[in-house]
Length: 167
Image (cartoon, rainbow, N blue to C red; front, side, top):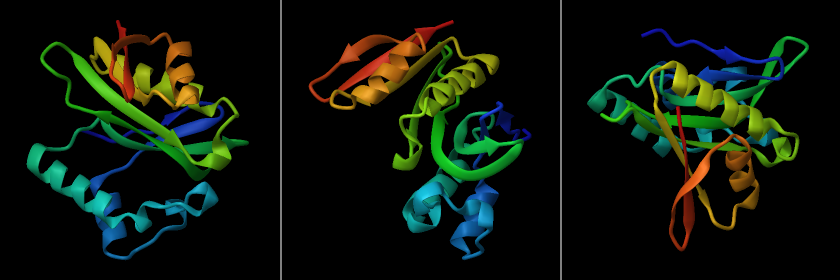
């Protein structure tokens, strides 16, 4: 399946592919690999290896899987400011989970709301009937983003809340 960017006026969700991971693991770095605030996957090779191994074992998760979140300014896609991962494939009942994060420099500007809306739209457009995300109880900003997106609390433990939306 083809990897396709999802772009809004202010951000782009760019699929992170096995080719990207293998390129980084080989030491080949592209300026687009940089993240706002200096963070980069090149600093976490174990995550890259785990991703490559998972795809080799289970197949390409496209259109699900990891996406890098890039800011768009004047039509130009800039450095990554976060990521979202849709943990596919869909379950038998059409459910999928996702997680999202932004670098500290990108927080507090409404970007997380946009990222979650786009993740939900991507999941729904690809057959998801149920979408879930978990937030730590102490992470009030993430909880509020999920709630504003229409997700409702479905499970609570001492450490985290699982939110869910059904289409």
